[in-house]
Length: 426
Image 1 (cartoon, rainbow, N blue to C red):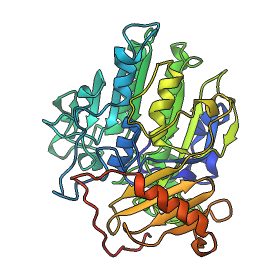
Image 2 (cartoon, one colour):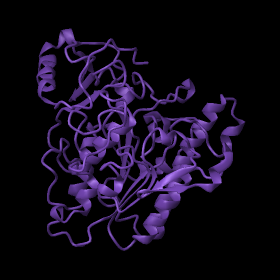
Image 3 (cartoon, rainbow, N blue to C red):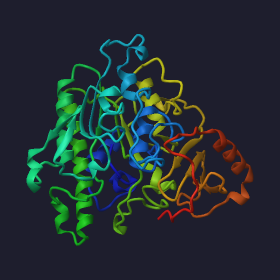
């Protein structure tokens, strides 16, 4: 999972200036989705949705910071993640390998602080190396990272030195994990911090000669570096004989943020990261599984991160998921079978101007800036840029959405609902 990568930063989604040959090849060998969405418009809640299968009206982490305290919120002990399901014997009735899945995360976690029950090792991950929170992850040359529950000093970055690029270290760990677990089912959650700000790549490569601003050169180099990570992982899977029997998902944690017009990171979409308009929520999604997922296919089926947990559970042959999961399995779509009818997708955010909500029902997208504010309505089938509010012409759709919004969430003490005048979405 990339960090702050825009849909249109990839060649397979139309990018012309940034080179992404490995991810483009992944798309050619798998299924590319045009209407896939993050769990939220920013890092921490989006990852919480992905891990728990609960949308932002239910998941524990609903924003990058608590509205009540301003501090970061951690997963609770009772929260169940996809890693716990893949490991836990209660979900593996009849599963062939009684050890369950070996599990690891290398990169950004964002869902637990030191001394809390929200650490990866307490939520199903055997191995963990990376950043605990997003603030620490803004530095690509940190002086330390976390290995399981202990800090590991990066001596190459002490005293102002910049020798150990964090995401390169995450790749090293991922490759070693695959090698060590080639004979056991495994779940690898690889979450490098590229191309998130600060925009700095170890080298610019072919982009050094471009006449772009320096930040744009670095951003492009970071995207291409991430692409190379994908290539290295796919090569390792092939080397170990696992590439035909491994499901690979590629996505980004939220909408793109980089604002350099020639790149068109968010393309025709409205706004960027942090917004509940399409530019903040829509993400790339590619799924590869030779012999199971049709190669070179494209799907416009709308789904989002809440669906990841039930999807992986079904693909792994597990017998169920927690009852509080909001998502549904999209395994039928992946495997070319009949999918259940579309159901509403829900988001809420506190990131830009107070409490806001969004819902997608089929081709319709509703947006509300405040708990009692009027609902904006957009026809994504005709207006992917959300330029024309058609609420007045479709009062029946608005009424249906408003009814859904009344019952789709539960209150959280960390995120009290307070409406404030909103800032422009940008």
